[in-house]
Structures are given as structure tokens and as C-alpha cells.
Length: 590
Image (cartoon, rainbow, N blue to C red; front, side):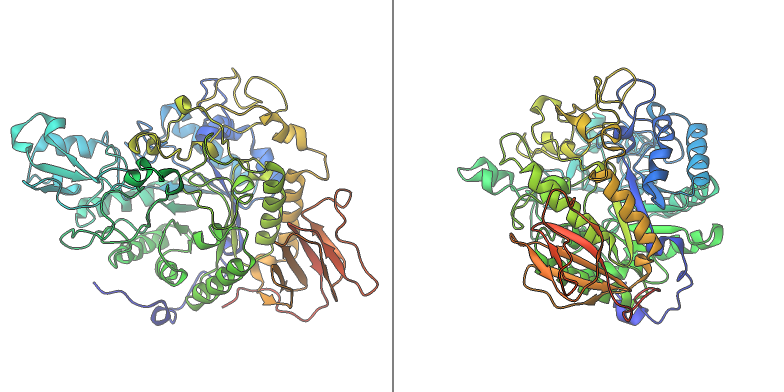
């Protein structure tokens, strides 16, 4: 199979130009940490139902539910043992049906996680594969290989250590000696073999099942990883993808950096055939069903290959997320994204936080070139909470002023920071164990949400139990503590999302206006969107009054109208401005 450039596919006519997701604000719910209604310390579907009013007041267009399937929870639900049911700790399928109804009645669509690269080792298929033995049809659904000279190749797991697990120690059978199975993540997450027709039919059935239950879209996990290069050749990176050897050396603390998702296990041309197959299925069973790719690929141009007319709808814009507090890099990413996605008729997406990265209210307080991929622990430099929140509010307001679709992660509307002082004993991310306790991992962004100012779990659980510990003072970020405060982060999100919809910014276009280095100023229709990443106030001349600001006027000397209609934007601030008519307005940049 050969890859086709995004340009050559752009002539394929699109039938989704009016689809709901083109300018949607989509809110990620991590069910385990959202709200616990039954008091066992683990969030559940009923807990989400009890806070639909919060989502409706926020004004989001859709929610994306992270995995809720039956799972041993080795990787927080991304190790699925049954793709057609709900984990008992989250509730029942009937509970989920009720939540879908509640959300639809509130005008909110529902997107769910699709995990197609791997299953749990407790999935009935994998248990049958171990029982059936070498060379069986059951084993062909996964990637088993024989090698009498150690692992079949030098691939490393993204969770640390080698990507191959010996089979004989699991089965205890001599016939399994020198047999291995592939797991790009934890050993308990064996990779599917996408050359097997059973795997294809399984996921076609999955799509039909969930659309029939009212699901409006799918977020595709590890979308770049399903197909592996023919022959499974060695890659250039080797098995140590977290530089654990370097970490254990004298200068290890400074070298904790994950190597990129490149090589023969990723971004192979064959993945696009799978998504074309899925698009055909979805077009048969529904209309404007969203598919969004989690594809960590090197360039925006390669990401655009996933969103051609006959494949996915959107791809997460990770270059935007990792651009940091760097105006030049942000502008580059915006320009390239609009160009590459526009070339195939797809909207750009924008995202600042999710369940796999340090929350941007903490991440943005660090220098732009500091790598936080491995998480932040108590022995790391600690973030500046005040600076981080100011930059996070500004970055979000700037992001919501861009055309396309925006993704939010639960709790960012509250200004939640990363939990950076979690005790080692509380950590549950498999990264922590598989890197010999050298990589803190992702637990810090997955801490249960606060809903009230006080109480043992700040309103998260009826009993005060939490599956991960919450930091002290968490209740001050709660909706209860922020409701009715005009300077609150929650109020900023609500107002910005409403204004974004009213002013049709998601359907607009970008026209850059002159600004000094470190400052971004663009026109989107009749709205000016400004971001000041410098350490000094900046006066913008020739613009109208401010519409909304990331700072509160009482707190900072910003947004003052000058004699010529100028506006002063403080350091680490962002705002939207009234502009004279005349810029591009409405419609997608195609």
C-alpha cells in the first residue's frame, strides 16, 4: 500500500461541510474522576448524570467519555476486556442509555472512546489465544511471533521496557517456549493483528452497536499505531523509549524525555484503509458521525492525511498543545494547521489539556522549552500557580477565538492545576512501575474533581473516598466556590463559549494583524483576538473596545481604551476586541 498526499485527495468532494462537529466545543469526561454517586471512590455514570446541569451551563456542544468498558484497569480503562458493555463500577448499559438521553435533551452530543490498537489480556479473544497454542486462528488475532534469540525485534513499549512479552511464563507450556506477543503499551495490553479479518469485523460491529445506542462520534485511541510495517523490522530508537538508562545515570534527572512515536510500529499507510472502511460503515448507519484521531505524528501535514474526505472528521492538534508559551511557535502551528487541514476540506482542532498531559494551568508556568511529558512529581521544580493560571486563562481565551473545533478537559474550566506533590505510594499509572519509579506519569492530571468548597472529597464522592488523593485546598477550585464570581475561571469559560457561538468564531477565518514580537493579534470576522506572551503591557492601537478579557479589570491595568481606541493588554493576558467590519466572516477556511 502506498501513501497518497493530502493534496491529491483534496478533490474528493466533502459532504460534511455543515456537520455539527466543525465548530464544536467538546468536553472530555474522564469518568473515573468526574463524580462518584455510589460512594466507592470511583466516578460513575450516575455521577455524570448528576452534573449534566454543569455541562449545559458551560455551553459545550458535546462530551467525550473516556473508556467506560469492562476492564482490569491496568491503564485506567484503555485495556478493554469487553467492547460492548459498561464496567460494573461505572454502572449498567441502562445507566449509560439514561445519560445519553439526559445529554441529548440538554442539546449535548455524546462521543466515546474507541480503543482499536490493543485489548486487555483479559479479553475473551486473548484468553482463547493463549489456550489455543502456536499457529492457531485464535492467536492470529494478535501479534504473536517466534524467536529463539530473544525478543523478535528491538521495539520498546511506550510505557517503558521492551514491547514483547514471553508466552511460556504465562501458559507454563513448553510449546510456547520462545514465543512472544507484542504490546506497544503495558504487557496486559496485547496488540491486535489488523491483517486479520476477525479484527476488522469486530470493530465494524462495535461502530454499529454504539451508533444504534445513540452515540454521535468516536475518539480513536492510538490512531497512528494499528498497522505495523511488514516483517516487523527493528526501529532506530530501540527498547528504551523513556531513556531509563540515562535517568539512572549521574545526570538522569535532566534527561527524562519520552522518545517520539515514529518507526515501523507507527503511522503506516495501511491505517488509512481502516479508517476508510470505518467511514463507509458510519455513513451507512448515521449522519455526520464524528471520528477524531489521536495521532501523534511528526507534522501537521501527516495529521491531515487522517482527515481526508473519506476517512476521519478531525485529528487532535498536538503541535498546538505542546507549543507552550511561545508566540512565534503558536502562530506557526496555527498557520500550518489551517493550511494543511484546509487543503483537504477539514476543520482544524485546538486543545490544551487532556488525560495524558500535565494540565496547562501548571504546564504553562514553565519555560516553553521545558519538557513535561513524563509528568511532575514532588522532587521536580514546582510550578508557579498564579502565573500558570494567568497564562492558562489567556491561552484558553485565545484558543476559543480560533476557527475550527476546540477540546476541553474536565476541570480546566475550574482552573485546576496538576497535582504535583502526590505521594509515590498513591500512584497508579503503569508508567510509574514500568520505568522503575523514575517517570511520575499521568496521575497528576487525573485527580478526582472538586464540586464543593468543603468536605472529605470536596463533593466528589458521597463517602469522601477517592481513587486518587486530592491536594489540600482543592475545594477552592470547585463550581460551588466559583459560581457567581465574575472574576472566576468558570465564569470566563462560560462567557467565552457563549460569545464564541454568538459571533460564529468557529466558522470564521484567521487574518493576522500587525503586532510586536511576543504578541499575537488576529481578526476572525469582526472579532479581534489578542494574546500577550511578553512580560510587559502592550497597547494595541486602532482597535475597538474589549469584548472579554482573560484578566479581571479590577486586578490589572489592562483593557483601557485610549484616545485613539487603543487597548492595553497586560503581561500573560488575552482578550477579544471589537473590530471594524471588513474581515472574513462565517464559513470554514477552505
